[in-house]
Image 1 (tube, rainbow over the protein chains, first blue to last red):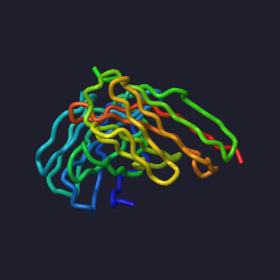
Image 2 (cartoon, each protein chain N blue to C red; image 1 turned 90 degrees about the horizontal axis):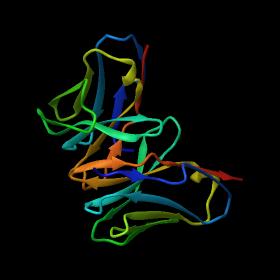
Image 3 (cartoon, rainbow over the protein chains, first blue to last red; image 1 turned 90 degrees about the vertical axis):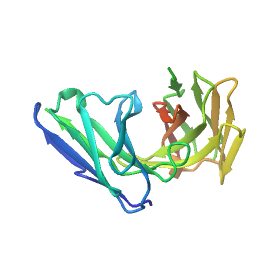
Length: 113
Length: 110
């Protein structure tokens, strides 16, 4: 398995609170991605990074921000969590971009009450 | 806007059968198509990646085909086993972002 960890694995939080999810890789891959997975929607890209401090928006970026200060870490922040952000969040990495294979972390289940 | 559809949403077959999972996409301008497997409570595992210039890829008992002109891909699983039970997702690389289908949940009955 590719060395990707996500923390926390499970979190319950209240509406309006800030939440930060962490993705950590040991593969030294350049590209990192945050997805959310909801029933009936498949996965949807939130944000991605193509290098340290280089990030861009995905399909569903509203309400989310990201940061990447080191190659190995990619943080996803929900500034003020809403119930619509209840989801399973997956981090993925890729050495050469989306044209090539992506490797996924185990996911974080976030519940916003 | 690219849309990816997987039908059926769920499939249950007896062990040993050969089966086909379907994936369709609306815009044929893709760079590649990828098939993934997801086990309950776990992340996704890449199974096969077909570049836009290729027609098929094979890995063990799995064979994936791609027909860009018709906007279709199939994943063929030969001699199915209970360990093949999982959700299978396809994703197309469209404008350097993966667009995903909702998946087919496959159950192989012993």
